[in-house]
Amino acid sequence: MSSPTTAVVRPTASCTMTRVPPEIELCIVQALIETHKRSKKPGFRLSTFASVSKTWQALIEKETYHHIKIAPHELDSFKHHVRSYRKLLVKHILLEIPYDFFLDPDKDPVLFSKAVHALWRILSRWKTHRVTVELGIVSRQARRFIEARHNPSNPSNTFDQHFWSSFDLWNSLTFQQSGLLVPDSTKRLTYFEEFHTTYHQHAGAMVMPRPNATLLKSISQAANRLEHISVSFAFDAQTFFDRLIRTEFKALKTLALTSSFSGTSESLLINAAEAVKEMPALKLLEIWNFEAGHVQADVFRYERLDRYQGRITWQSTKQRKISSNVERSWKDLLRRGENGFDIKRSSFPMDIRSLQDLLPNLKLREQILRNLT
Image (tube, rainbow, N blue to C red; front, side, top):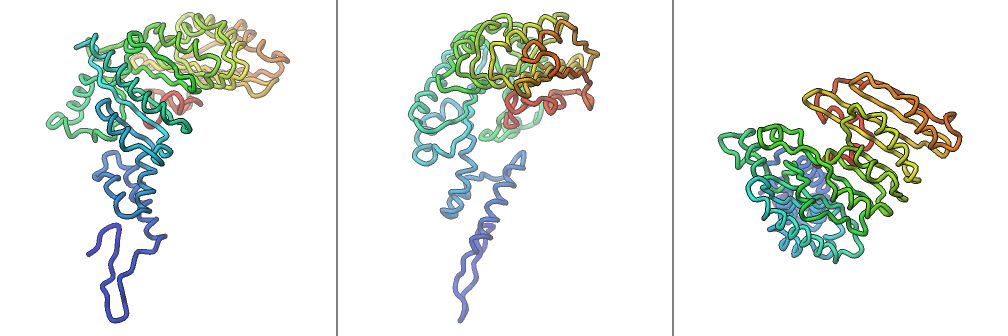
C-alpha cells in the first residue's frame, strides 16, 4: 500500500520495511504546502496531513497557524487550541465579524464590541508574543451578493469558508458607535474603508467616506507611540492635517493617507508640510487616491533621505502642477533648504484602470492593503 506521504517496500529474504529518507520526506511536505498556498481554491485541507508524523506536524502547523481567520463564535475553540508553543506560531489574526448595518443598526455594534473584547481578553495573556490583528467587518448582504454573482446556481460552494479573506465592507459607523481604542502596545495602525467595489456601487449600498471623528481621536491619543499609520478612504487627508496639524507624532516613521485632490490641493500639501514638522522621525509620506468612475489616480510622495536631503514626487493621471508656495513649504523642512531637495512630476508608467494597477506604484502598499486582504 502506498500514499503521497509514505512508501512501503515489501519484505523479502534480504529486505525489510524502509522509511522514506528524511530529505525526501521534507521535499514532499514542502511541495504539499506550496501547492496549497498557490491554489486559489485548494481541493484539500492542509491540516489533514499533520497527523502523518511529528515532522509533518511541525511544518504544517507553522504554516497553518501563521495566519488564522476566525469568526466570533469560534473564539472559544481558538482559545482552547492555540496554547503553549502554538502561540509562537501565530503572526496574524483576522477576526471576521458579521455585520448588517442596514437590517439591524442597533444590535450589530454590540456584537462587534463583544467579539473584539473577547479577543483582547485572550490575547492579553500572550505576554511575550507580538501578533498582528485585523478586524474584518463582513456584511452578510454583501457576501450573498458576491457569492451569487460568482456562482448563481450554488453560492454556498463559491468560497472556502476557512480561508476566504476578502473584506466586503469596512463601515466606519461601527467605530463611531462602539469606539476604536488603540491598545498601548500598538506600533502600527492600518484602516482601509472599502467602497469602490461592485457591491458598494449598487443602489442603497454605497458607503461614502466621512470625517470619522472617533478614528481621528484614537489616532491623536496614540500619537506618541505609533510608528506606522495607514488610513484609506475613512476621511480625506485634508481632514487629518486640519485636525492634527499641531499634534506631535514623535515615533512616526511612515504615513499613508487618501485624498480626493480636489481644487484645494495646494492647501492640502502646504498643511501636510506643516504637519510633518511635528513628525521628527518621519521617513516616508504618501497621499494617494483612486477614482474608478473617472479613472483618476494620484500619488504624492515625500521622502526624507537624510538630514539634508529630501524629495517630493507627484505621479498622476492628470497634468498636476506643484506651486511655488508648495515647493517652499516642503523645502523649509530641510536644514540646508532647497539645495538638498528634489521635486519631480510624472505620469504613471502604465494605464491605471483599477486599484490593483495603482498599488504597485505605492511604496507603502503592504501597509495600505496587505496581499492577504
